[in-house]
Length: 251
Image (cartoon, rainbow, N blue to C red; front, side, top):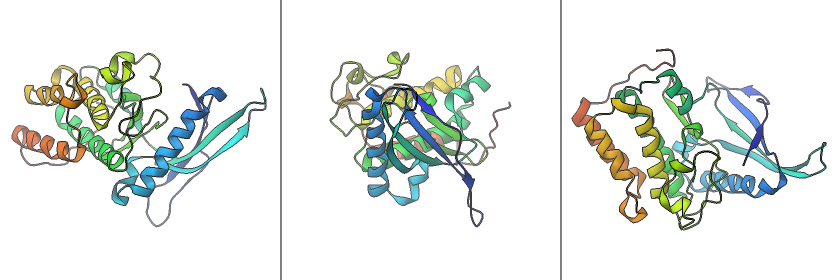
C-alpha cells in the first residue's frame, strides 16, 4: 500500500509541553481503505486499553473519516494523526552511520521500541510492519514513536500485506500467510536493531537478536516487557549501569 501524507496541519504546545504535529494520511487507491481502517482501529484500541504512561510511543488518532478524491471521485478513508515533530526514521539513522550505530546508542532505541511493542501487545494489537522506515526517533530527548499501523492485526490474525520491497525482512509466518503474534513484532524489531548496528554489535547482542528471530513463532519471545528486562541484564553486563549518551545524526 502507498499512502499520501500531507504536511503538518498545525503545531502547538502548552505549558512547556512539546509541540505536536497533525498530519493527514490517505491511501492512493480506495482498495486500501481497509488498511486505513486497520490503523484507526489499532490506535483506538491502544488508546483505550494501553498504559497512559506510554501512549506517546504511538501516534494519536485525532479522527478517521471518508473524503471524496476530487480527481477521481473515489471515496478515500483519511486518518488524521498527531505526534511530536523532529522525528527521524531508523533508515535516516543508518544513512548517517553507514558503518553501523554504536551499540550503546542502539540500546536506548531497542529499549524504547520494546516499550512501544509492550504497550501494543498488552492492548491486543500486533503491529505487523516493524521496519526501519516505521520506527521514528527523536535524537536529542531519546524519544521513539512507532508509526504506520495499517498492517496491524490481533494476535492469531494474519498480516494483511507486505510493505513493497521488504519481503525478506519478514519472519516466515508473515510471508507464509500464517497466524502472527507478539513474537512477529519482536522478530522484526530485532532485525531492525541488528541491521542498525551492523558489524559493530558485540557477540552478546548478536546472540540476543538471534534468539528473538528464531524461525518458528512458538520458539521466539512473546512478552516485550519481559524481554526488555532481559535486554537490560545483557546491557548491564556489557556496559555497566545505564547512563545518558547524547546522540546526533551528524556524527
